[in-house]
Length: 82
Image (cartoon, rainbow, N blue to C red; front, side, top):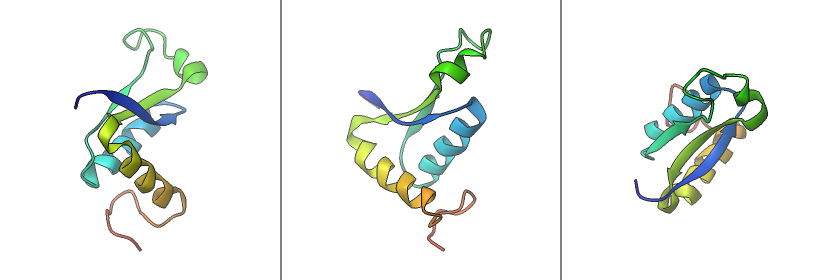
């Protein structure tokens, strides 16, 4: 990964991990970034969210995958369309 950009802002770390794994299963390198002082201030996740970041070159593809997921075309345990 070179320049990382947010592809999705989750409401908590668990949701972010689910989205990260979905992207990884679709062949997109992704990671989770939470500015919560190393877990010491988890309440910051509520106000700032938790970012799922991807390489800038993968952002468009990640957005397409996330749109398919939101439409229900992808399941979390599959990377094939229904």
